[in-house]
Amino acid sequence: MSKLRISKSPSDSAPPDIAQGKGAPAHDDNENFNSGLSFGLSSCQERAWRALAEGGENIFLTGGAGTGKSYLIRQFLARHDARLFPVLASTGAAAVLVGGRTFHSFFGLGILEGGPAATVERAARNRQVVRRLRQIQGFVVDEVSMLAGPVLRVAEVIARRVRDSELPWGGLRVIAVGDFAQLPPVERDSNRGGGWAFNDAVWEWSKFQTQWLRTQIRCRDEEYMRVLAKVRDGRVDDEVADYLNARTGPVETEFEGTRLFPRRDQTEKFNEMRLADLAGESTEFPTIASGDARGIETLMKQAPIGEILRLKIGALVMLRQNDPIGRFVNGSTGHVRKIQAHKLSIELLNGRRVELEKSTFSLLDADGDPVATLTNFPVTLAWASTIHKAQGSTLDRMAVDLSRLWEPGQAYVALSRLVSGADLRVARWDASSIKTDPQVVEFYSRFAELAPDAVL
Image (cartoon, rainbow, N blue to C red; front, top):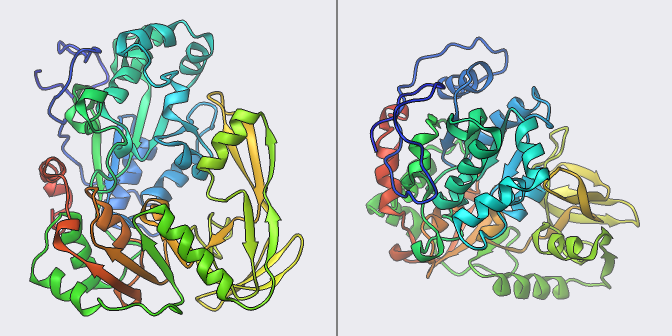
């Protein structure tokens, strides 16, 4: 495939069809912007904000954990009508957290039954898909790294077909957000249609302008930041080994922080054990469900809350949503100090006390209407969590098992949850668990000038 011109006008290059595969990522030169915005942004964040707010190009907003991707997207969405610029998530669990819809449902992809060609034909005949794609101006796709390239390609073909336009995505503006150095696509086996999105022809055809955020917002510990940057790159040198060894050892049972385990059964067993160790009877809060049966069943698997919440005074809990007025974030932890029928009093580990009421988590259909809801206190027991469930959260204190991990980026996702390395405990680790797909390293090396002080 020839190099595509960075333009919204049709080029002589052929768009990717449903049979095409790998292609090289487009590389856009990044200008030096001076946005003059009133809120404090670093230079890379300011460039990204200008590209988002004032440009019309398709954007790939990337950067390590804690660099402000979510913050910029929230600012962008606050200035756009959600009906014209919806948020689409790569997974159902992510959709529940961001209050959006899944990418698959919005484009009518299903599980790509019958293959790409049949999926395109089916979606193009679906009146709801046609209506949705014709009324929007663009969309944000969250955690794009978890979408396989062929899935992205089929959706792009559907958009051009439905909108009767040979422009990329039928002229829709696409804001793709994510970090390929974190968790990979759910489907990676090429026989099942998997693979990194940037390896597919659709990535170049989409003409993404890459905005790489490099300034850390979450972490201000310089030594820890250096170690994180190397772990993100999959490198274990003397500095990384010495840093982890210095924090490795038996973690006492009474450790008041969150333990990250690679598997869910380990997490559930540990939380149940710690709750049982507390004195007194537990109070149960059944989650109130409404909607159709299938929707409720799906939402139960995707929501951050369970079917029943069991609490005791003194229990360590994790708050599972961001507070609109900034008192806590998704991942903040604290102890339950008072339990009432409609209110919890929680003393956060930073010393702040918050009163928490019940919240509702919704499963939206492809049109953005709720088909199922779950209502309960937005907390889970926080003595333990899985690494996957912790993605996107900010933890206060953490003990982690970094042995026998199997996914590229899994160790980086775990370690990058913290604000400071001073709050890190490592139960055990091995160098083979710290890995990044070489294709990801090669991909980001093409944009090195956008992050000159990054390790990659």
